[in-house]
Image (cartoon, rainbow, N blue to C red; front, top):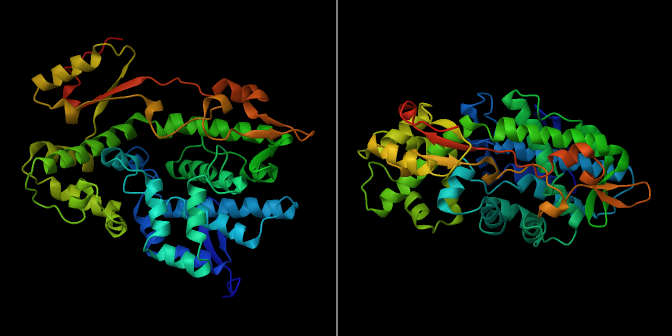
Length: 416
């Protein structure tokens, strides 16, 4: 097999300008059906209901993570900081490209109801009967297992793991820049090129040179602002809650032996928790949205109503709740009296319960903290060197939000 493509492949990209592919394996992986499936899954789930430009896909994000990883490794090589073999470099690039391949439609809303994690499906797509697995094994028989170890954070070279999954990784850097671009906000911007120049592999970790502290401060502040202004946005949360209620209602109806107007494969296996990799492949957002449109016509009034609310953007309203005691019970009783089943029309949420996190220091977080390398080659956790980061590390400023149908706005009085 030839080491490099005869001609470098180039993708025009809204964030990185250009994405470069030289190795035939990367090109082959991009063209697998499992990677192409990610074009049909949005990066930001239902955020397009809040920010109309947020239609970008997990495919574009995956290419972006690959490009960020490629740029970081190239910087290491130019400065003589990496002695990885060609196989390990290709492993890192492949892991970056494939890290999200197991995502399902609408991401976390889907996972919550059906109790699975996209990382598990990523590992299955890497190792079972898929085009991705075949392409990897054709190049090197144990490559799927090695990438699986990177995804599971057990691979022996900790620097490669840190590149793909840490508090300063290629994944986060791309999605912050990409999500900011497509939502049209300025919060997620930071000096990406400066950070790349300041990164160093050291003792199984990725660390930052001391004179890169200010660039990391800007990155973490961008991350902080994006979480509160975009990822935790209550309108987005409302649409995700309705979607989650739809999935829950479908699951409940199935268990009650309800006869659906339309209920096609692989939905029965999804409900019973015994999907295989080929069943899972079918589940993309086009498939789910087709079902939602059909389920508007279901005779079950709750399912029909929830699907209509989601597709036509008649979202739940919300009120901020400062004092939780008794509020949920009061709201449940009030909704029930008005003919709404609280199980499907009421939700209390707290932002920090969601699958996003702001930066947290070493003592507060399981993931490797961001480490600063001093001129004396000592490692210091960044919040101990930066007052800016110390002020936001692990901050829990969220408040509870109570979500309910718009028709109930005049009937729910929430004490301040």
